[in-house]
Image (cartoon, rainbow, N blue to C red; front, side):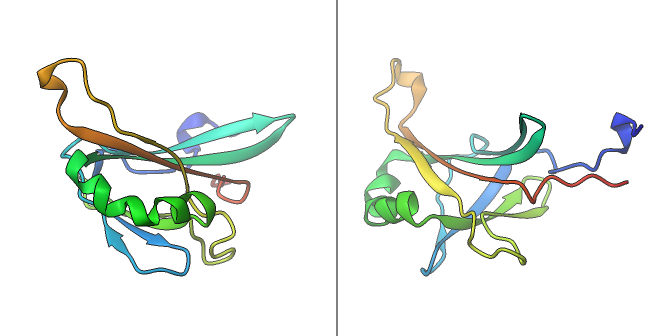
Length: 142
């Protein structure tokens, strides 16, 4: 039996520093992030013994930047995108694209929250969430 310490690390830690979204069939968009608020998660899910990975990219954006992104929001929801994610540690991850399957499981927009906030300290930001699921990304070193 494999020990937990032998399981391959799926992603580096340290938060997200930069993200470049590349809509399917489109040009890349450098996302204007609010510092130290965005994240990328991989969640391993199990349904009846079948493992799959949910890739979740949460981007916290300046509220004023959302208006410029609105023309591509519908495309992000229907066609999806890949993302080049650069962590605060300087490591690069690609989500929503693989050499084997290309854009078969792109990240798709699941929500765009533009809150008014409760207090002045809440800031003026928007939260964009993109997700994809696949069964090929779960790998362990054996």
